Length: 69
Ligand SMILES: [Zn+2]
Image (cartoon, rainbow, N blue to C red; front, side):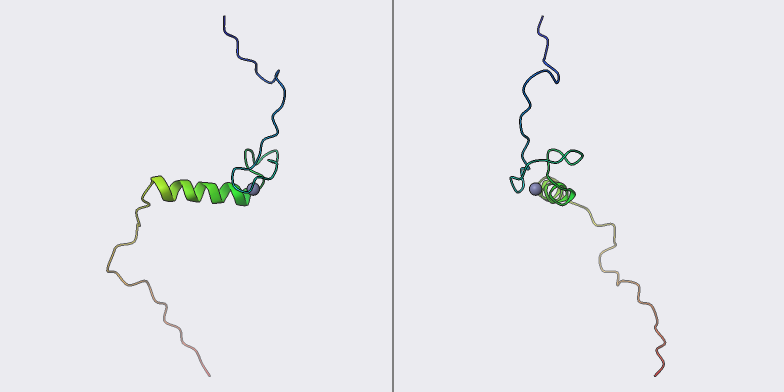
């Protein structure tokens, strides 16, 4: 039998792969939501080409502002 130790082994101090700070519970393996976001952004940017849902060539909607002076 090859039982994997679950939670029984020594705890490894997880470190944030982004900045190297100790990971925080809830944000593991990152230290903060910011680093989590950073890593996710890098990951997405590197592996996925995010398709733009906007139709190319179409100008953005311009709101007619009636400014009075
Ligand atoms: Zn970090």
